[in-house]
Image 1: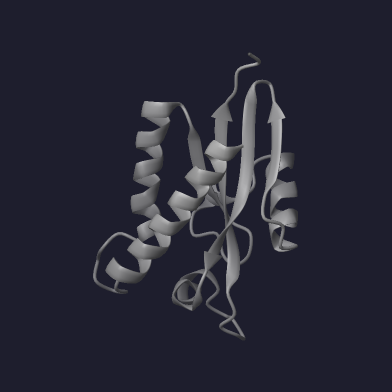
Image 2 (image 1 turned 90 degrees about the horizontal axis):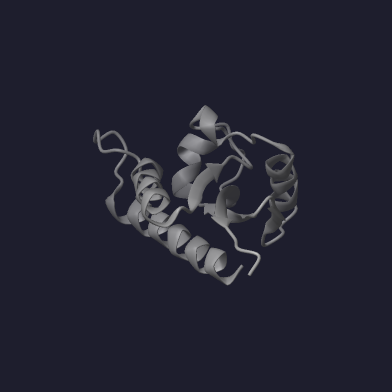
Length: 133
C-alpha cells in the first residue's frame, strides 16, 4: 500500500510539473500524459508494476482510459465522491486507484464545455503483484 501511495504521488507530481512547465498548446509537442505513459511502460517492464490513467470527470482523451471492470467503475464513483483512494487485492494483485487533479490548464481539453474553472478529477490506477509471504 505504501509503495502505491509513493508511486501515485510521484506520478501525479511529475504530470503536473511537466504539464505546466513544458506543454504549450498547438506547438506539436506530445501531451504530458502521453509522455508519462511512456514512463508507465518502463516501470511495467522494469518493476512488473502496471500504471494507467482512468477517466473520472470530463472527456476520455483516449478510449483506453475508460473503466474496464467493476473495480474501475467503483473507483470512478469513489474518486468522484472525493475519496483519496479505492483499492482491492485479488488473485495476488493489489490495485489502487487515486485521484489526479485536472486544473484549469487541463480543462481546455478534458472539459471543453465547462461552466466553471474549478478543478476536476481524473484517476491513476496502480497494480502491484503481492506475495503472500
